[in-house]
Length: 251
Image (cartoon, rainbow, N blue to C red):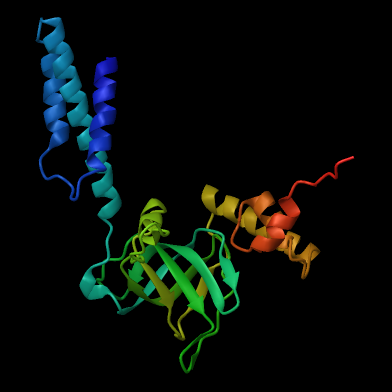
């Protein structure tokens, strides 16, 4: 049993070193070898088969999960097209000087056959070139209709730098984009009930109360991060001052 588990871990680890996902059904091979272990009377041969079966199962299971994560993908031909989406704001939005960023759980595409990933990361800017764009007050759990322009995940190819594309994959975000100026950008429902939406709504309420109580205070972002886990508004210099341990002079 233990050697099979070690083989499973080795198989899952081996997949991480591959340049492409496999096409052969490793899960079926592993299941067949695992069943064959019961029919082999010799102890050492049975252990070897269990190790190989565990390796194939681990390799196949990791490949299956990777296929599921990569499957919801925006077609290259659909990049840069304007499309109207209806969905729910499903995280705590980040407000910055020129707009807001948030994750959007897509429920359906309005009036188009375009295939859109179920979760996308959107930015809503106050202005795009010479066009003005009124930024909506988006809150977690709200259902919106938005005209957006999407692209596939792209990251910078800087050695040893932050891998934005991998981070998006970890978050389940298979497309990024921004909200386009449109007359039909509107809130459809004030709140869509769901456990995750309730949690994110509570986080938003707490963040707003903290920021109202500490207007203009540079350390407000640190307090927000400690209370609700939102680190995006932290001033790094102020965070060091707040969290620094007190120094003691030698007596």
